[in-house]
Each structure stands twice: as C-alpha cells, then as structure tokens.
Image (cartoon, rainbow over all chains, first blue to last red; front, side, top):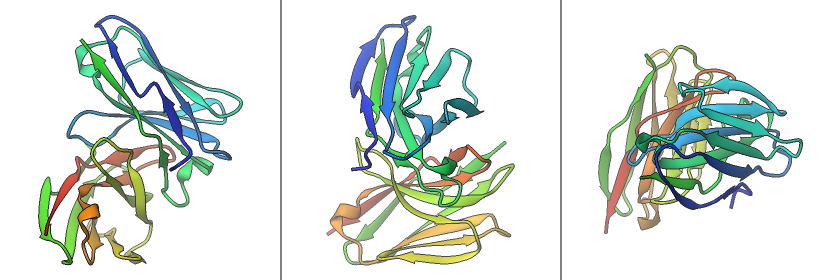
Length: 115
Length: 109
C-alpha cells in the first residue's frame, strides 16, 4: 500500500463527454504527477503539480487539465473524450518532486473506457 | 526524440538469475529508475541510479553507465511472485519521467 488513492477505479464514457479523475496523495507529499498508460505500454507523463502549481507538462493537448488543492490532492480533467483516451490513468505522489531518490508512489489507477 | 529501449519479454526459471537491459536516449538525465508492475496493479518502485555503478537492494540490483546510456536490473533467486512487467524510466528534467515500454518477465517452475 502506497497511501495514494484514486477514484473512480473504473468508468465508461462516450466520445465527446468529459471526465474528472481524483487522487489523494500520500501524507506529507506535496507533488502529484499524472500518467496515461495504454494497454501493453509504459506510462506517458501528462503533467505534474507542485504546491498547487503546474510545473511540468508532457505532450498532451490542452483538453487534458488538472488541479491541485491545498491538501495536495489532485484532479485530472479530460474534455471532449476521444476513443484513444481509453487507458489506465495513474496518479503518483512524491515529496520534493521526487528528484533525490527518483521514487514515485503510485495509486492503483483509474481505468477509463471511451466508447 | 527521447526513447528508452528494453526487451519486450524475458523468460527464466525459478531460482535462476535474470538481467533486464535498458538503453536510453533523452535530452536530459538526472537518473534511471526501475519499477515493477503486476497485471492490473500499480507500478512499484524498485531502485534508482543517479551515478555510475551498482546499487543492491536484497535480491534486486541495478546498474548504470552514463557514458554508455545503459543500465540493467538484475534479479536473483527468482520466485514465481517476480512474474510481472518491469519498466526502466529516466528522469529527464525536474518533473518528467520518461518510461520504456516494459519487459514482461515470465518465470517457469
């Protein structure tokens, strides 16, 4: 158990809809990053939040957006869903952006299916 | 572009030793991490190398050569529970981890 919890665990949406995924970080961790993992692939970095500010973003379009709250929990929002957005969405928390040890603590993920 | 290469699948026998290689090409490099992921589960951290050399943690060891842009994960005394996918990942900046596609480790009794 990493102490990182994500909700919902599974969800099904239709193309064009919007979705919000939630993540509670491990106690004491001020950094949250989000990853998209397609079946049989490695995770792809979406963005990172550090102390409520987005401080890094991967190669994802603006319809992927997020928030981090004062308690360091976070949301990932995806608008105008496309079929290719079907994936496992992973949230990871760390302290100090995980720079010193390279260690991220992952939640179990939210599996999104877009029909 | 930025990429990490690792074998897609490795097969080994219970009790044996296996090595999973990773080569990388990234615009920046802070360190190389290894993660384990069981089917349907979350990635779990195994090791991190920021400097050249070997890091040992129990049955697992990880090696890095920055001049060769190469690293490996060594698993000893394989157990059936080690059957999983193993990912190498490079921290290329203050915030970004770039991941390989993963190596599926199959262990036979």
